Image (cartoon, rainbow, N blue to C red; front, top):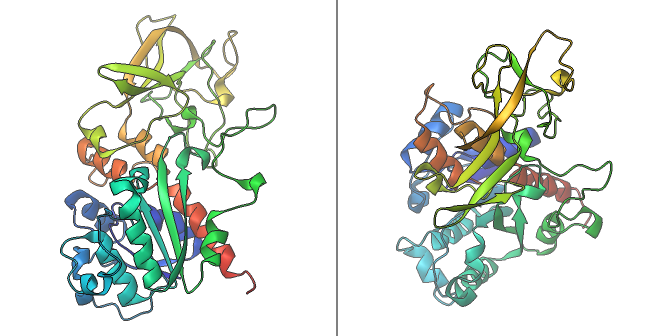
Length: 367
């Protein structure tokens, strides 16, 4: 299926949907760094830039799906048709204009939960009224990324629409009770959480020689077919009020503000090398964890001494959003600031993958 992505950012949708065999017809992004990320990873794909100029875009092929998340400003359904001719900078209206212009079979729209209460709900109601006026059936639901395999609390409103019928969107967003994604994962014996913090943190040892043994073992399961080693993380903290942090089982919602201040912190042991002395930073792998008796692989044992607190790294933020490691490190090295901002503004890849898979499955349902 061909899809058109607007407010593209660093393209969580494309990362999520590549495995489905879907291909983008184009992107629309105006921010400098995200545009550079798109050019780096998708050099042959057109970035059309300003989405308000969509009528000038040279897209001749049919668009099967429109995806993006826009600010939701007030507008009246009664004035919709006139408004589509003169969006006046209202990107929610522009998005509706694109639905009217390209007439995709599906659309996926994303926003923050605050959209449900903006202007007493009138803004969101106006948007839904507009897409209905254009002939789309729709369903909406709040989805939290922490229930899709990443250790980040990230609640977002998703609206899925289908031209002419509300039933396909409902089938996409709502599952049977036993499969629901909006309840906390079970911690019963034999069951694992959807995502653990330890899985998302990068190795801290540059040479990989020092390995921790002792009482600081986190969840040791690997991710990505053995491609990652979890860092030794025992606690995570998120910002609660002025200068205060509270312990949290998963990371707080990443935001664009992360590039300005340490909103999320992690704590890990400060190990001492019992032979050479001094603190070392280490990573841990299940194959090296042998208990206090040492290792059978010749690795030098280390012991923990206190805790070190630090902020999330860009790679850790990439993992918390479901991106490949160093996806935003396009200049080797790339300054951290733009990476934090772009990742904080992005959608979570696993959530988008789930929506895409559900759309694929719904397409095969009988009428």
